[in-house]
Length: 300
Ligand SMILES: NC(=O)c1ccc[n+]([C@@H]2O[C@H](COP(=O)([O-])OP(=O)(O)OC[C@H]3O[C@@H](n4cnc5c(N)ncnc54)[C@H](OP(=O)(O)O)[C@@H]3O)[C@@H](O)[C@H]2O)c1
Image: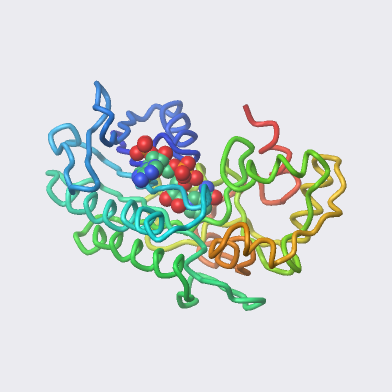
């Protein structure tokens, strides 16, 4: 299949492109300014809503992983605007461009996040649960609404609400490794907040299934079978690294350092499972946390 990937240079995009290429697909990364597209790439300008329709012609699938990194730095008002527009506006631009392709792609796979649910304590959440409140919940709601525009245009559309992706090379786990390796790791706040997670292998596995398997349609919580609390995660990471985890980080310190991100990401509680994934027959590579952590820490 000819497959277009937006956000191909990112943590998930890089792993997905390698896997799809190894599987024999023809993968075309979408390239944003200031980079110029070369052979085998498609140029797009998400800010201006432009995409090289001629280069995209014949695409059977389009994957949307684009967006300014949410956890990289504090959320100033301008950073929040960038986080939002690089998802909501970019997804709208992509969907409008897809509608111009003739023939239209068979499938559009777009990501969202468990941030959709806001912070919900111990409430069990699945795909039928309503959106929560806060910046991330609003962002995910609007981002998903744009992606569902592809469905309204008759393209099979799959939305994966990812949990925290576990990879040693990037994302949340990589940011934690420094203090944990020094033996300075510990729970965040009370540690009682629920954290849905997913191995990078399973993130790529689910994206691939969503592309290749026409039975996948609609919204899925892309999470491991069991969420864990932050305390259980902290202990598991300490065991995996063979380091003590005796230094809890107080809630107030997190708020001082990270601002709004502390409440919406580090302290937010989302006890999320998927009731839709079992219907697909998806078989996890890493259904349990400690093997997933070992894999993340040894992955090349
Ligand atoms: N990693 C996680 O734990 C996780 C969890 C839930 C949801 N997600 C979502 O899944 C998607 C992919 O995640 P990821 O971890 O692979 O993200 P990532 O490493 O931050 O990569 C995202 C990619 O988006 C593109 N991008 C578009 N606009 C951008 C901008 N203004 N600034 C910087 N990059 C921009 C870049 O690719 P190009 O330069 O190639 O365009 C970038 O490499 C994101 O939308 C993310 O929110 C991730």
